[in-house]
Length: 579
Image (cartoon, rainbow, N blue to C red; front, side, top):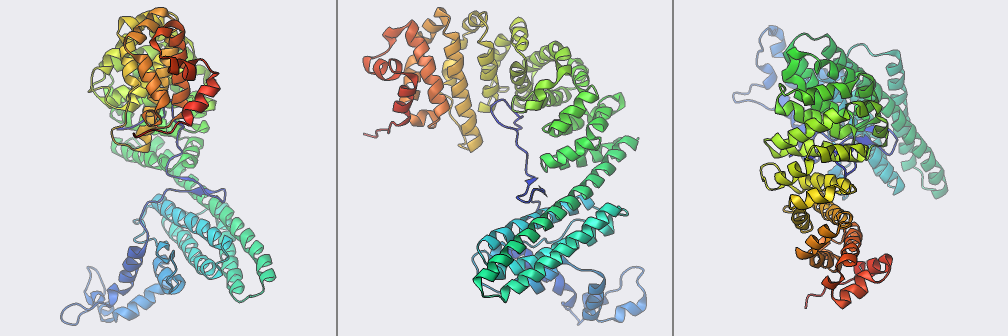
């Protein structure tokens, strides 16, 4: 199930990231290791493998092949082919792979197979990841003064860089003068790196090596910068081509395929999202969302927009093209499918995320907020699946951070009843991620005095009590973190609502104080979370102020009477007893 960028987590930049050289490092798209080497060797030797009857693979006639070519020896043909084509895998295996038993020798990067013909984007991403990783590894070996490894990896890096340049030139359009210049600088630095590391192998004087190490480090850094510039220029060029294709296409299948390619690129990380936003990707996608004839493509286009809007450039472009108004139209139009409205809710959740500071200045959102909030509450009420409810509730949760008026709107729309009723529906609320969104909304709404009576009327205190016992089912770090957030926010909600004596008495009647004491005293119950501990101590003190008779003397003296910081230190240092 998808998890939207929520109110308890920072938005991840995704699989791609900027390397230590300050340049783009795409996500790894293939596997590496000894199997890659074996595949490369097989490709080298495949033309030399004889078939039954003494015939070679290259002696088999191909359709349209001229007769005299069939008589050429396969080895000779292979040697001739090498003049026209350099396979990085072959070069790595034959020239740069050290014959050693070093512990990291199995980690050498060999890019096998390579992207298909006419696929410059995949070529750039795959080669880009390999080169970025090689740069980082060379830096690590350089820090360890392992000069033999530094040199062999530098030679291999040169092979990869040369292959990327030649392969991209073969499948792309004519390169610009700027790209050609950077390609030249990159290859010059690669040659310089190989040459200087080779000289270092012959130097034994430590003082000389130290000065040469600084030179190698500087060369490596400059090489990384040139590589990053080249990769960014090439990716920008390919993104421009995709955006132009979307704008110019009048074929729904072409538009669908191109939009899918654009979405795949957004999954490579924030740097590519920035490029897409700057090159008009947001404008092109909203153009799709404003054409009735392309309604079947709305979900895909909106999903791509949600990914792009994880960066500031994407949100700014969304505001420039009145994207919020378009989202409001989609959400309020019941003729759209539930899937389309859910994806629109995902975009709203992204652009209102409290962890993105630049979204707080989205002035156009305030104009359509009432319509959007009303539509999202309705979507939560009518959701047919857990994912739809998750996206809609995440958008509502983030909006309650975005503007305080949203809480008053939700109160008027009876959102508390809708959310609490959904909690008993396992089809809609079945994960801690969804309960995290619900309790976030309740926590933010609980600052309103009128909220307490609605909570009691809908048996909300009992639900909050249950959230204090939230436990992960799978044990994954993400789910454990979600459970911690649910416990923390449930305690915060309880503390805020307990200003009302009726809520406090109901909480005491439901044994909330016992559960809060257990969470404070038992680190395992709260997964040793300090945030949960602080929230539980605050809630316990609020309840004790209304109903002090519900506490034992030892609990009062240790958890309520001292300063909050002293109680915190006492509980955070407790060792569990297994006696």
